[in-house]
Length: 232
Ligand SMILES: O=C(CO)[C@H](O)[C@H](O)COP(=O)(O)O
Image (tube, rainbow, N blue to C red; front, side, top):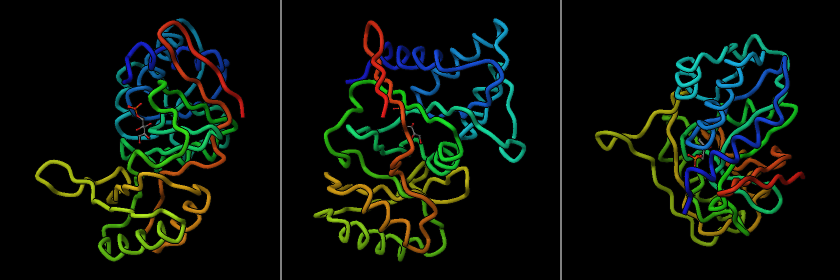
């Protein structure tokens, strides 16, 4: 079970990677929130950086804390992205998107010189798949897309996928920052995550999926009394 101190200690350890003049991708979620808060304190003390938020939620948080932001369209280099994860395995492969921000998170992580994942120990897994894999899809044709997502996961060796449309208030599908829906794919185990990523990416209607393969090179796991840093 996660505790808040573990999350915050991971975030504090990530601050060590920040240098003056950097453009920094700001992740989404409760762990990333600690990073933005600690970054805001450093900025108040004179650190000169600017942020690129991975969601409207993080944009609002950063603005409220006085973190200078830059529109991604005006950025030619992102030095560092610090973000949370729903699961991380021993190869720094991730499931992300529990907060429905996976599309912007992946665009920004992929554009960054370095992606650092910050997490508490409950996110560490032997194999990905216990956490339902979020897949962002266009509203148009989403029921058909869901069937194709099922086929794609089967082709990737997932034994019995179950696909749910993620609903929000009023039992209506939640709408992502990009105007899309989220399919939560219950897999139990994803035996071959790169294969699943490949199969999912080839389904028309899939905008992005929450498998982050080969993106994170540093994983920081927070503990009660500090944090462990793993380099890949
Ligand atoms: O991918 C994400 C949002 O889309 C989050 O990073 C992920 O859900 C982890 O969140 P938290 O730190 O609150 O557990």
